[in-house]
Image (tube, rainbow, N blue to C red; front, top):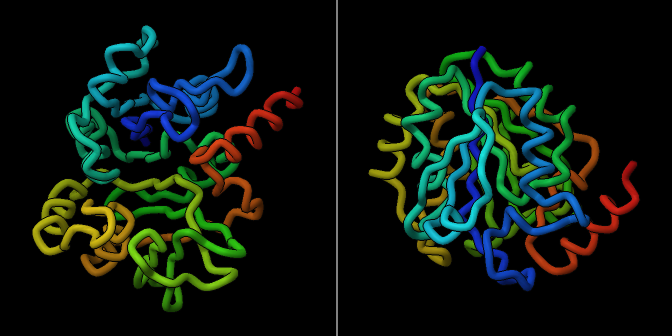
Amino acid sequence: MSVCAVIPAAGRGTRLGGNGPKILTPLTDSRTIWSVLYDRLTPLVNHIHLVLSPEGASVFPALPANVSTSIQPAPTGMGDAIFRGYDIWSRHDAVLVVWGDQVFVSADTLSRSLAALVPGRNAVLPVTRMTAPYVEYVFSGAALTKVLQTREGDVTRPGGFSDVGTFALGTDGLKPAWEAYRATSPRGGATGEINFLPFLPFLATQGWRITPLEVADATEARGINTPDDLAFFRSLYKTAP
């Protein structure tokens, strides 16, 4: 199975005290968020596609041959960012989406997600139980029925399933499904975005199989969104062998 990893990375690191692409934030003297993600993904996928802001693209360092880029002109949501790379990832059987600040998602989780993915109209959703989930995925039996998002005013439940910023999907029929979703789904009331996460239960209503994959270590769900997050991950990578 041919796999393209897509990293939406159009965000700036202003909340972290930076003024450039967030994905270039240093974790050690020699490692950045980008270098960690690149090293982790390269052994598992055939290609990596970065989605950058115009400003980010202008300062991004030279890229290896197995990496391509596209531009998201305005920050209109992760779904828009992912589909900016459609011309590239549609050439592959599957797309592995990893948020551009998700440095602690493990190689084990990534490889298990790809191993569990069946080509076609299928998706694998790695989830972990959180004490206070920012996002909660609600299942009825094995079926994904809804996504609760605190940023949109939803109330999540202690111990509910959250994602780890990683999603594996077959590419067959994915773009038409996204267009159908966009035509029927309102923008988020708080964010003004057409959110990507509710697209997953929408896919389930369209006959897609969404397979949850439980991740034991809830740290994998933590991205780098605040100075405290950055300090936490810098301390981990400083002591890593």
